[in-house]
Length: 270
Image (cartoon, rainbow, N blue to C red; front, side):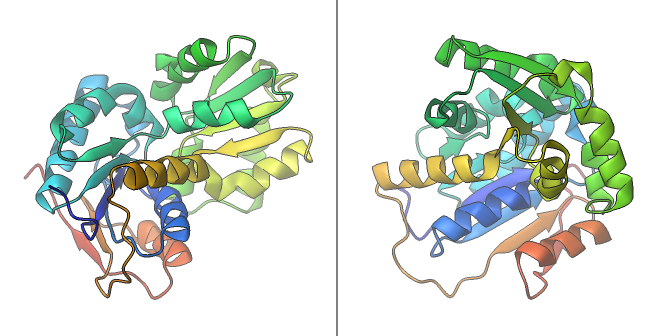
C-alpha cells in the first residue's frame, strides 16, 4: 500500500515537464517530486514509437524503484505512444497520468469552442491522438493539427522570449492549417515557456490551453480519490535527474525552482 508521503515521479524528454511539475506543486505544495529529464534522447518528437516506449519503460521502472506513488508522463509524445506501457508497468499499486486526457476533458469547460488548433512535435501530430480523443469526447468540435518540430529544440537551447523565437513562432502560427481556429492546444509541455509569445501573435483572439494546469488538476483528483494526497509539510527535498547534463536545463530549472536544484546525472541505459 502506497503512503501519502511517497513522492510523485514526473518525466519528460527535457525541460518541458518542469512546467507540469511547477503546476503540481503550486496546487499541492506538500508533495515531493522526483523528476527525470531524458536529455540524452531529446527530442522525443523525431524518434520511433518503439524507441520512445523503451525510454519510457526504463524511466518508469526507475521512478517506481525510487518509491513513487504516482508516475506522471509529462510529455505529449510519450503520452501519445507509450502511456499504455507506462500504465501497465505501474499496475494497480502505482498511480499514473498522462498529459493528453486531462486537456481533452478540460475542453468541456471551454464555452463556444468549435475549432481547435493543435501544435506539437511530429510524432505527437502523426498519432492524431488529440483529434481522435476530441472527436470521441466532443463530436461537435473540429480540429486542425500542425507539427512544429523546431520549437522544442529551440526552447531546450534557451531560445525563447526573444526576436529569434518570436519569428519562428509567427511563421508556424501563420500557416493556413491554423486559419479560423478559436482555441489552440499547446500539445508539448515545452510550449508554456513560449506562451507569452504565442499570445503576442494572437492578441487574445484565440484561447490558449497549456497542459500543465489541467494535468495538475487531474493528478490532485486521483490522489484525493485514492487517499494519497500528502497533507503533511515535509522537509524532504525534490530530486532532479538527467540522463545527460545540459546547462540549459539547469538555467530553466532555476526559473521554476529558485535556489538552483541539485541535478544528478543518471544514465539508465549504460
